[in-house]
Amino acid sequence: MKRPPSLRRPLIIYPLAVNFAILIVSFAIIVAVAIRFDSGGPYTDERIIPVIAGAIERDETGQLSVTITPELAELRAGTPQLWFLAEDDTGASVSYGPVPRHYSSLVGRLGDLSFAQLRDRKPPYALAAVARRHRTDIGELTILGHGALSDLNLIVFLASNVIVLPIFVLLALASLVVTPWIVRRSLAGIHRIAREAEAIDADTRGRYLSENHAPREIAPLVSAVNAALRRLDEGQERQKRFFGYAAHELRTPIAVLQSKVESSESEVTRALASDIQRLATLAEQLLDIQRMENHADRSRFDLAALIRGVVGDMAPLIIAGGQTIAVEGLEDAPCLGDPSAIERVVMNLVQNAARHGGRKIIVRVNASSFEIEDDGPGIPPEERERVFEPFHRLSPSVSGSGLGLTLVREVVARQSGRIDVLAAPGEGALVRVTLDEPRLGKAT
Image (cartoon, rainbow, N blue to C red):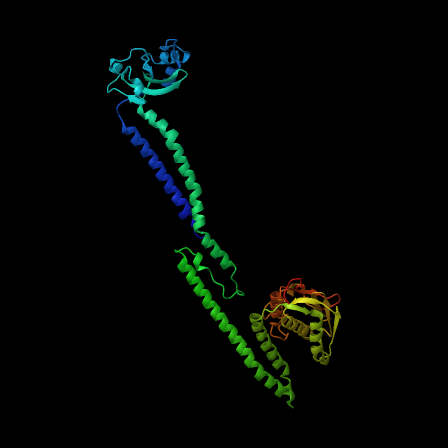
């Protein structure tokens, strides 16, 4: 099965790819424009200024002098055309090398400058010079010097690596981190709606998706889903009312028919009593479905007393059928649930044991659980789960609607309990129902 398309690619991958492409193009344009910005020639490398400043000293009379330090000697060896002019704030100055006459007018006024980069127009660029103020042990000095030349391309490349490249990296990292975060935050409403949708099932009617949390782009879809849920709720409600009305309407004619059959003098007519009883049972089961949907009463009750009451009401019919029934176990068994629902569970299970079991039925009460055991043929292990399926019978010849155990399991599940079909210690079947125990603080 083909996987559905993901929104991650159009919302995260594609924008990131576009951002990276824009950053790379912008970086290339900035470098190209900077390289083309000035084509006037090479610059004097300003790294000569600290070397020159370290070689200037002041004597006892306050005059400046040049000492050939190892650094200056190395600089001079690499740049034979080296020259410079240095001046302090008092006007004292010192020069080294063949200072061009073009700069002679700056002597005595060099201290007025702070920064300059000078170039001439033609090779060999002997007039190219750099001027900088530099703090030294003998005070502030303004140095104008000519040394090794550097092309603008190299300067721009270095500047790009030092300044532009870190900015590019920061923008790239920001895109990688911020873009997914923005997308996740934007889709948070969708994830919330998805969690709400997962909580909706057949037993939670009247619950819809939150349209307030839906992004504008998917709001029509959420509205359409809510409209569909409303239609389903309305259809389910109509179906429930139909079952309820049908069951109620069936009870009266069935009771009338049952009375006439029982009072009939014809053996053939009285033989229809069992079929009419099946109709009556089916009508009651339909009503049970409606009751389960409409009632959710949970209270404390005495399970032992409830079971004794049900068995007492059913005992005459069971004895009349040539069977026996007994109640064993506790005299007091507090439980939590719907007493009327549990009463129908006990009644259905006892009727099932009387119909399909042997001649002896035992109902045991154990704290918050009870068991119904018979000495009939039992239920094969492979059928112990299938007997709860709607309309399932162990054999085609078995009478009944096939809904009794299905309804029993549904009722027990709604009471937060469980039901298990086991083998009886001797022969026969054993059905065990476990319910909630009452806890302190639960409402009665």
